[in-house]
Length: 216
Image 1 (cartoon, rainbow, N blue to C red):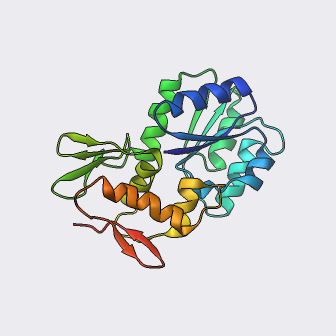
Image 2: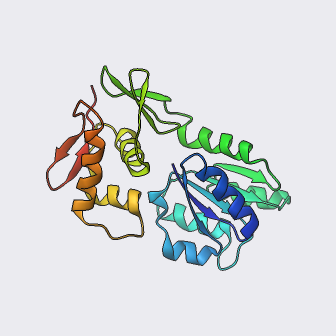
């Protein structure tokens, strides 16, 4: 899972990043709302975690801008503000949830999972042999876990999230590598590593377009 964090308090930002990276999630952090809009594509993330009172643009302005572009990535506001008008404005801007500081990181994790993966089955059968844990991004062969690298897990999660649809090479590269420019060979190498770890080829290659895991 990939989180986009807007938070101008470096201590809080570090706590959030350290906590979620322990569970193999990626957290990209910005402290300035204007820099976030210029530097990040919210559609490449699973969730937006936005402080309200930030320099440049505040979190409400950032989210309002994204919603105006029809970007529906789930968003949670985290803020020390307790004024009811801010709460109303936060929901009017398009947020999905709201959490007041100080908060427990485990509570934040529960809220994020409810938004991002609450409507997903935890275990997705891929074939009669393989299944994937969508919440923890783990692949199983029967009862045995198949060891995967971080990008292999992200790749499989993305393909299963859009199962039955072709995921373009460009979208995969942006999701896995984001700011890095990588060539098609890098993607093919990652795909080959994933395929070498399973004994059934359940990923279709649409040459020149992308990849797909078909429905059963």
